[in-house]
Image 1 (cartoon, rainbow, N blue to C red):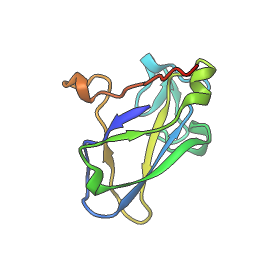
Image 2: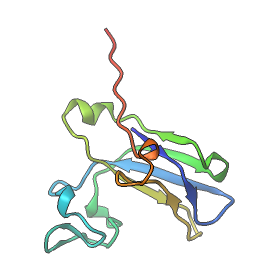
Image 3: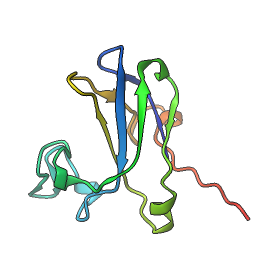
Image 4: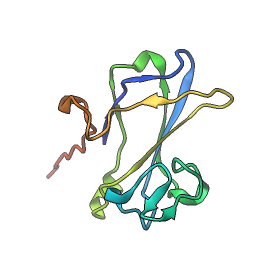
Length: 121
């Protein structure tokens, strides 16, 4: 899975970026900042509760010097199970900053998240 790193709210320092599986009852068309389904709230808004997501599948440290590049995460195990929805988290100890990643609806299609599949024989 690839995400375009468009920026972060505060320059300097590193951010831990985590990719995890979706909440088991997540319905993507109904998902909002506060709900995982219509009228069913996340434990903590913004999918920040421990029960709002599965364990991290992949984690990497991202430095602000990487702005303007793609961040890659290996989702092979979940994709082989037919799971193609993921939750992306960013955290930085003691510093309030966020990472900017274009969404699937971003105006520039070239910078939208991508699921890449490689076949080997």
